[in-house]
Image 1 (spheres, helix red, strand yellow):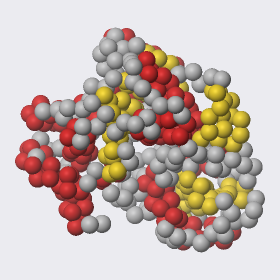
Image 2 (cartoon, one colour):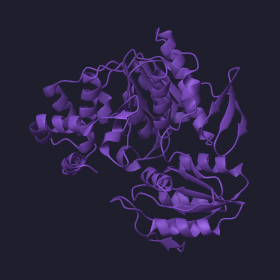
Image 3 (cartoon, one colour):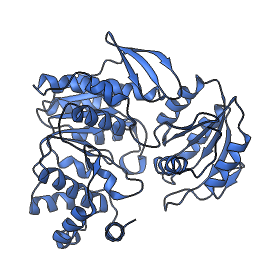
Length: 410
């Protein structure tokens, strides 16, 4: 980490933590909203990050300069904002911190609010063609909700972040629906029952057209590293063995059709090229084939069900190394893993929110590297090691594998 990056981290670490947009809105009213180009705003319990990445890549491969704002970051804050894959530079962040320091402190902005504002300034000053924005948390009170998009997307609604935007599915749906803007089309993914009713009601009051995604598709082939599926008369290939990514891809197929109807030119095969790329490290990352090792950032029950369904088709015996954040419902996730028949090893990782001890009889390893090394030595050809429980943990472990920290046979 460079000296500038350390200075940025120190500055952001000193910012207050809260989930309340009132101070941020007052700050924006004072300093002004950065002028953004055509923007797509995406929320959802799961899949919003992958959908944002596939959409941004599709636009980029159509010849546009595309700003992408996603969260959380893993190694450094610069990951939050990229233009065609290139991260926002330290110098830009630090310059804006110095320029707006008094206002940031006067309005007591959180680190996420500060970085949202600086990122939007970056996209504005660089004159990008499009901005794709992933919501940080919920939607209604999220810092990103200052944008005026040409398209809003809600991928799905499930139980997550219940302390902040729950506790019920209806509460969470209201927060997700908070990104709906007047007279702006809304694309929705797999949303049902009471959550759908709430979203449709908000959309009706705001005269926002609701466009439902048709999820009638067929998976033609699946391996650990690739998926082929058929959708609306055409075959698509994913550079991922995660079948749950198929719904994210289909959502983006529909989003691109909406953009085309707005006379936005999308190049032939842009999406197909985008789908072959990795979304983010730690999203169903196959870090070893022999032995089979998958690292995934699933961190709520909805994501765990999808992930375990994906792994069933491998017909391998699953060993799990699990670490989690304290504010997640990790006991339910462990129950799902137990019901699947997996052998479970618990561990932790270096993060202030990480669970450091578990109140159960499962084997616990204070060092996740020791747990992984022990698991690897026990794997046979019929086994699969799944490392899971947190996006931060998954990202860290994926990069450790790619950096040669662990020895595998292939």
